[in-house]
Amino acid sequence: MQALTPLIIATRNPHKTMEIREMIATQYEVLDATNFSDWPEVEETGTTFLENATLKAVAISQCVDGIVLADDSGLIVDGLDGAPGVWSSSYGGEEGNHAKNNQRLLLEMTDVPEAKRSARFACTMVLAQGGRVLADFQGMVEGRILHDLSGVEGFGYDPLFAPLGYDRSFAELGSEIKNTLSHRAAALQQVIAWLSSGNPL
Ligand code: ITT
Image (cartoon, rainbow, N blue to C red; front, side, top):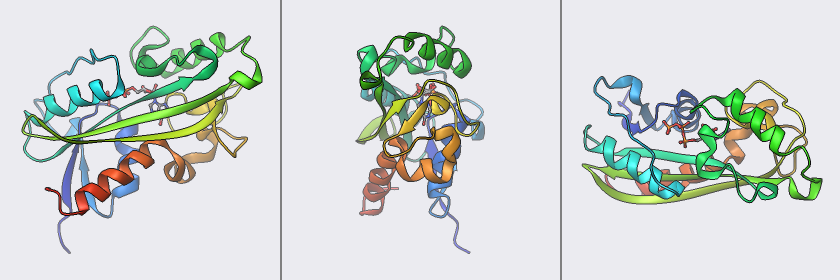
């Protein structure tokens, strides 16, 4: 059997790695921070998904050989003027605490009328090698914010987000459906098309 080509994901979020691995496991050996010992902390000081994805991709690609893929993503809620947006992972006051983030989102949404509960997940992916950006890609999924948490699959805001055309949350629908609809899937499809069309790896 032929060895799979490695693809290094510049993330410390195991859920992102898992989703990406599920989507491309037959084509790539998906690696992340857990496969490297001297992986630097990258401060996400940007004010856009593109800036933060670029910071992660460039910094990690300076430390490892091969092509690095960074994913910066978040939830954009119309009734909250676009919040939590780029600050999705620390919205509840503690970086990466999904329970607190969801709690705050529910609180902020208390008086938001149905028509303003529309929302979208956005994902920007950046490919870099040797500290140089190769390309960037965007993915999006439209949906709405539910009134209660439901479901146990996925991560982050998945229990509160129902994609367009569904009454159930991503956390109820599970990865099989999420991976056909998600912002991450949409961006990743473009990444894979770019990599397979003769671009380096
Ligand atoms: P890395 O920077 O290490 O990749 P992270 O989780 O901090 O991991 P981001 O800075 O991109 O990643 O923040 C993304 C946040 O947006 C994440 O913590 C969730 O709160 C939310 N999010 C992104 N994609 C999501 C998804 O598919 N489902 C639910 N929530 C998501």
